[in-house]
Image (cartoon, rainbow, N blue to C red):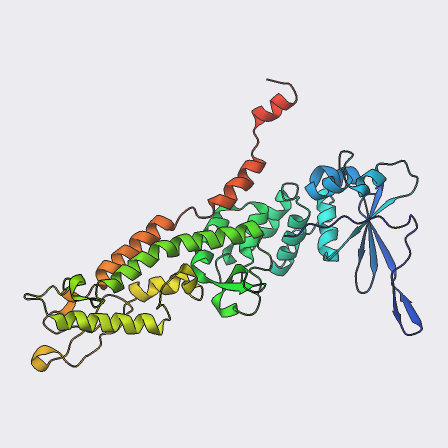
Length: 394
């Protein structure tokens, strides 16, 4: 999430925002909300219909928000901080941008420990609160409220249409929900290139080309990178399993590089390998997985698609060209393989491939979120003993 960019403070008597159309000028009415009666700072937010002022206490903002602390604390290098900390009889005005006015008001009330903070929110309102809490980096100061707001919605965390839960759980540190959703998202997203193909972002396949909907719009960059890294790690281990599977049946390029027959019948039948190779080649080609040069060839696929191709059972299929004039059936995975009747299931390599895929998913399926979660946890770790040392009490 982008942080608010500090801007020079306006004159001490801020003029009302105006919009000109021809020779007419419309003044937007100013509304002031008193968050702190003894407040020494005005937060100014301009909306399409009003100029909103929130009278707040700078000391509260500095203590509870790392972003406001960076903009206002006496040790801050920003010019706004120097002006704010200079002697003045007028309230200091700090201009904010692109905030939801209601969400901002609720955030300021919660930071000032107001009694008039909503006890429950709709899910959309919960997401809006998570946006401003993350933007001003004050999740620790609003954790009590966040727990209360999230309580009514925890049952929806893994339902389709509630993908913003990944962001909400990240903001307020709900590790259990975040871990589950992270693992699911890694397997359900494909990759879309943006900015002239120089950058890749994960998107849900059904939303491809539409900006990712409510997913990438909110998720912090560090989480997006972790999703991409973990997805690439899984694919890098799946790829050799698929390619070696294909190469086992690939016809020899020269007589000196003759591959042994994979057929398990006695004696081995070359026609069996040929049918296997043809089926595998057709399926990989249909899925646009040939040629398989780099992991970028898999950008359009989700991990689940590749895994389900192997592990999802399919109905039996009949094939001509079998010995004895009978029909043959294939079993084991999502790819329908032709085989000779007498060879039946023994020549179907999908069971071996399925075992390899299951092993890869088991090894790579856990703790992919740790690279982002550990940093957040270390940042907020604290104990009674550490606070005791801070105040000089052993």
